[in-house]
Amino acid sequence: MNMDKLRFAHLSDTHILREYKGSLIETLTGVDNNPTETLKGILQAITQDEKAPDFILISGDLVHEGTVEDYAFLAKLLEDHIIDIPYYLALGNHDVTEAYWEGVGKVKGEKRDLFYEAIIQGYRLIVLDSSYDHSGKGVVSEEQLQWLKETLAQPAPNGSIVVVHHPLEAGHVVDGHSLSNSAEVLAIIKNTDVKLVLSGHTHQNKVTTYENILLSTAGGTSFSMEIGQELASFNNRTGYSICTLGENGASVEHVRYPDKFDTFLSVELKQMLQHS
Image (cartoon, rainbow, N blue to C red; front, side, top):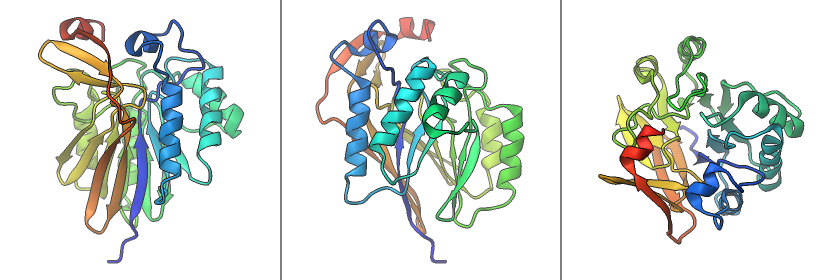
């Protein structure tokens, strides 16, 4: 079968705010680091690449517990920096649903569904909302599980991609930060046309497999984390992923941005887990 190749950029955990002064993000990353400017630089690198992606995906924690104005600020930023390339958004646990609807709607002129599907060059993009319970742990609602099962009952021409903010398998990154009902989602996507599952949340790059399905977690664009035996460090080893699907399956390439590396803050892992 001659299958079209799909190539797109996956970003996550942008944590945009109009003003970071006094915020948790400023505490974690310092006054000299601005996630908004980092996102602009990443979008410029992606859109000016000679191989423009077929679309751009941002898989949650778009804004850090912000207001309608913060979401309108993000939407305007995306409209100004992503020209002639479709983009798709998912929500994370730090997003505020009502503010998202109103803020993005002010710029886009529409009320976007929190979970939805889109067909792109014969591939089906399925976006889920794991911020449903408004906690850090994350869960996909029963309504979405049923919708996912019904949607996957009919295969897409070239296969499906599932997007959910909380990873289906987080490993040792930060215990308890995977999707709380991962087993239910995995049971639904098993033996379907799903080729790739994309997540964020942990601010760490990770790739694994499940039943021939590639599971990829993208590091955040706002900051990254390194977990040791006793310390958790926050740094600017940020970036994005380039995902490719075709006849030979799915592949993911992690791209670092910027090239420099600075550690902002280190905290005791035990202390961080107590407050997560």
